[in-house]
Length: 402
Image 1 (cartoon, rainbow, N blue to C red):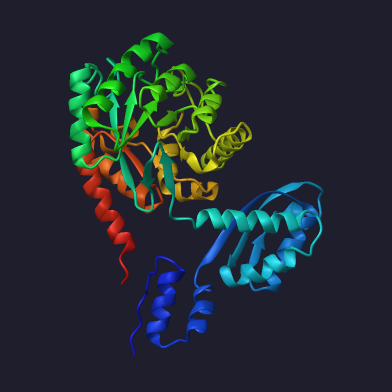
Image 2 (cartoon, rainbow, N blue to C red):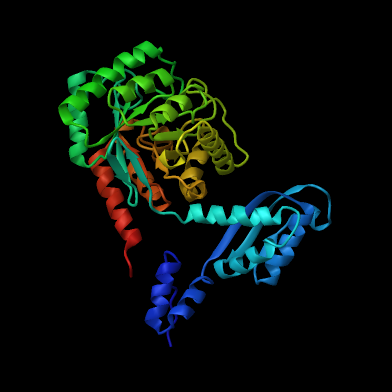
C-alpha cells in the first residue's frame, strides 16, 4: 500500500476525482461536500442565538466556537466561528430556519455570503462594450501628472500619453486608467479645473486616435472631473474614496449608469500614512466597502457595475498590506469583482529593500500573482506586458484539471 497527500482546488475537482475512483455520481456529489471545512465568522449574534447555533452545529457533525462569557449566558452580542463542511451546513441551515433569536435571518445571510463567495464570473458592460471577468485582466496605469511617485512627468503631454496608451493596449491591457492627480502619501489635492485640464484633452485624443473598442477609467474622487471624463469618452470611474470624499460622485455614477471602482482608504492622501491603525483590517475594509455599495445602490447605482478595491497603501501599514493580499479572497463575500493595485508601491520596497519604484517589478509581479490566486479579477499595473504574462500563467496553473 501507498499513502499520498492530495490537494484539490474545489469540490468540483474533488468530485471529478471521486468519479475516477469509481464512485457513483450521487456518491461523488455527497462526498465532495464533506471534503472542505468552511470557517464562517459571525459577528453580532446574541447569547441565546450563539448557544443554539453551537448546539445545532454539533448536532449535524460540525462545531461552533463561542466565547466563554456567552456559554455562561452573559447577556451581550458576540463574535463566533462556525466550523462545518458543506454537507453539514445544508443540514444546519434547515434547522436554523426554524429557530428564533434571528437565526432564521442568519441562515439567509450565510446563504448569500456563500453564493457571493463562490461567484467566479462577472461581466461589466458600458456603451456597447463588454469586459468579461471570468479570467483576470490588467488595468494599465496612465498617470498624466507631474508628481506621481513612480512615473510623474513621463506622460503628461498629450502625444506621450497617447503613445503610452497604445503601447499598453498592444501589451495586453484591457482597461487604461487615466489619473490627473497624484494620491501618493503626503500629496496635496489638485484644484478641479487643473485636474480637468490634465485629463480631458488626453482622454479625447486617446479616443480620437485609438478608437472606442477598449475601456478607459478615470482615476478621480471629484465628481466634476468624473462627469467631464465620461462626457469625453471615459467608461469607468475609479474613486479611491469609495464615494466618501465628494457626495456628488455617486450621483454622477448613477446618472450616467457607468461602472465604478470603489476603494477603501483611511484618512486622505495628505495624512493617510500618519499612524494608521486597525483592530481587524479585513473586517474594517469589508464593512467600509459594503456600506459604500449599499449607499450607492440606494441612490440608483447598478450593483452589477461596481468593482471593489481594498486600497493597498491607502492608510495601511506594511503588515496591513501583506494581510490584505494574504486574505484577499475574504472580499469575495461582497459579490463583486476585486481590483488590486499593488504595482511598485512602497510596501514592496520595505520587504525587498528596493528603494527605486521603477525597479520593483519582481515584487509587483509577486503581489499580482498572489492576488489572482486569491480571487482578484483586475490587476492595476505600470508594467503591463510582464503583468499580463505573469497572471496568465498563474491563472492557468490554478485552473488546470489534474
